[in-house]
Image 1 (cartoon, rainbow, N blue to C red):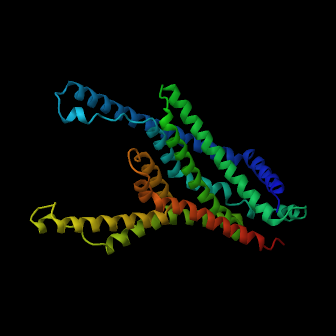
Image 2: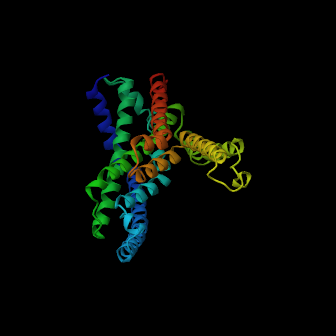
Length: 321
């Protein structure tokens, strides 16, 4: 395998996809979602900004006291991007599946794959090139949504600060990783199924399983097995007692375990947890932040690796006759 031939396949895949009607439809849907999410984020941001202004006026007019020791914190413009990317995540998985469910099966059905393999190019170069081309397309989609959202904010005179920049880029990065997760699933199914229709049907089933059934079932099973929430009445209403604190700490730890399990099994829950964790990380230590989002990072790393490995292995052993 050579990087040059992989890049040639990737460029061909990128060019073929970007000029096709399906990608243009998917891009238009993504940009529409970005506009909706940005508009919703602006509404929430203006509400938070009004509340911040009211709190600031109240603090300045108040006598010396606790109010002056705890000044309100201005809402960051990055919160608008958080809303936009959450909207993309809500529907982005199914669109990423639509982008890759027939990357291999379509070429096998049209017998163009046999013609391609007759050239001086190896199978691993083809599958790696297709994967890189698909990831490049998704990066283009996320970048376009980010540029459109930024342009809309500038129209409304909302300018992100330098402190917001790293959060915005992180939101974009985890959203891209989420889309790559579902794209890798689609690519694997495209190599496993002989027909594109079968791959599409299985992709929809997997989407429903990971987005709806897996998190709901995991949460319900976890809640059924965990301990009951401690009753302050059992400790005479003294919530500061040692016994109550021990019980409530154990209860909170079990809730964290359930949340981590849900994040591991559902990429959509994982990316939402990541975005929320990043947006609330101001003032928190790196250790505390990682403790809350480690399962989300694991899920968005494990899924693409596993499914790309399945697609790679299956493609190398595929019978193309």
